[in-house]
Image (cartoon, rainbow, N blue to C red):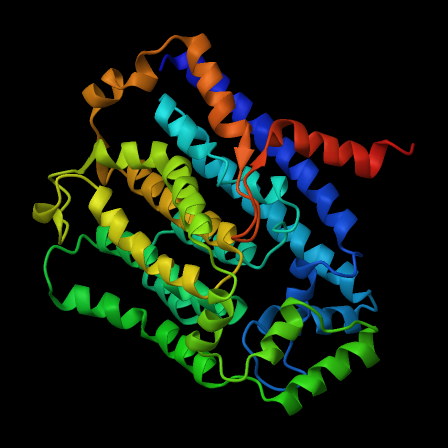
Length: 408
């Protein structure tokens, strides 16, 4: 891509991210007082009745609300907005210099990446905002620094597990990053030290799993929300009390009753189409020879490596009803990890394959059509039974108009 074209795409990307931030803040504000929004209720979970999974953020927010005499929902809005804006700003900084070929443009602007939470308001403001933010800050640091390792492995990454325990499944991407950064090329002391550095995360995940909240403690939490904040523990909040033992079997049995083969087929297509530009890039990439990597000789390109890091996330499709959320989180970790390896020159893209790819060879007008159809004409909705949504390029501004401008 020519230099001027690259600058133009960076400017377009800035406008794109800015618009998503503005729309996102507006939608967060509009829905923070809605009484049946699951993304709000998830932030109600706290430790007033004792330890409970996903209660860390709720504990901070309920205390913040009490100390500063701010309504609980207003406090949630403040935290959601801070993390949302900070995350999207970091995404812009992280990706702005990477729009140098059409496949990278399509992968970064995929409808299952940054546009998805804004297009589907029900997902906007979910706790993975915090997980994404912490992961991106890690990639901006000097990862080799022992202080950075201690801060993230003993404090910030464990907080991710306390915020949303399924995030442990996606930390295989962080392990992959560490293998590259520390140039691990064999099963030696460095490799086993890296494995041990993730042990605190695993221990915390196990503690959460074997310590479900009791019905008595759940009612204490629910009563505290009602008496102190006049809020009902509903949807995501009540869900943690409804689970008697945090078991996968319990979740699987509940999901099995709603499952249909057509849902699995639809989401297989969503995954294949949404990931397609990234899949092609992975097939066109290889590890630099001067950068020793433990599995370098076993893989000709990065596709299989990333496929194996993706596989653990498939567990969540057996226990979670909101499949599109899993797609979004999986794609975020996969894309950001790939882009990090590219930015830091751990991998190389085959320029000849990129240049001779069909997407690179078509005219600008045809690429614009492909770009609009792929990035702006569809997005997954929320739960597995939902059909695919259409025309986010139109739907997002229309939602804004309907909520804030129509009655002026």
